Image (cartoon, rainbow, N blue to C red; front, side):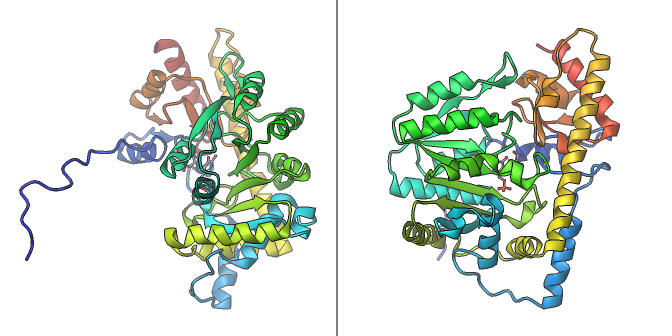
Length: 410
Ligand code: PLA
């Protein structure tokens, strides 16, 4: 017999606030104004502002259909061909770490799910160890760590005065963290600032981590998408690997292969020996099994097919360069539009210096609100705009909106 309840036992559940990034897409959908522009979520759009499925992805899917592949469960660690391809793409196939089997790679539910697996591993094996994240960082880093109960604090990263890297502050905070902390680093195209350390600064960061016995945890969500080169965008990670660090690296294929909804990525742990790698991998699988059992196969097959076929691989690189190039093009056009419209002499060149799909405009929350409420430009409230959602035709309009918000809103 059903139990009648006057008051629901869910009565004390409050309404959660919209997600600071994905909630922007929901608000955008609800706006009926024709001029509306979605610069919130980092998702690549064509010059016509339409979503883009890479041609090479279509070809890989065609291959899969022809082969008549089945839908059996994958092993807990994911598709073997994908795991091999993704580690090789990250480090380079001839990297000693790969040759010696010093890497534990487990397919994850894209970047987010892979970060979550890494964080769960930290919670289980290094209880109480603190993770340091950059200020600011991708907002979900905090949620991921908090939800698995890993303590975190922030290191200085962005200097609003120079609109550049607060390198001194970053090093001081890394130095000040308890020995043996985990330092979360963005492999390339830092989100949301678009500011990366120089090669010399990376070297100094590595020195500091070594000195303090800290462990790097790289989040690589934009390999190949930042500069157009898979190798250049992995150089930070490869530098740390060659210096012999034990470390975590989360990867995502959402942006560089446009596989957002396929949820394909990986967590890698680089270790001093193959024996340790085997043990760590077995424990990552043990964490994955009760969370989601085993990962989806479709995106893994796409990646494995593209990376495993030299013709498709070259086509992918060309499409990545095209996407990165289009973003650089709107970056340039937006900068020129701001320069020609704003006669105050303000230096807008930070837009050109930032890399990747985002620009961190420096607009405050109320200025960002004005962008949305008055101009129908949807963006995150930290002042970040996704240039991947902008086209050349809208650069003038966007420049007008930025100038109005910057000068007319406190
Ligand atoms: N890490 C960083 C630094 C990211 O920017 C993102 C995505 C991810 C990981 C995770 O992406 P994935 O799970 O799809 O692989 N950030 C987006 C989307 C593009 C988001 O917030 O989920 C963003 O707009 O910031």
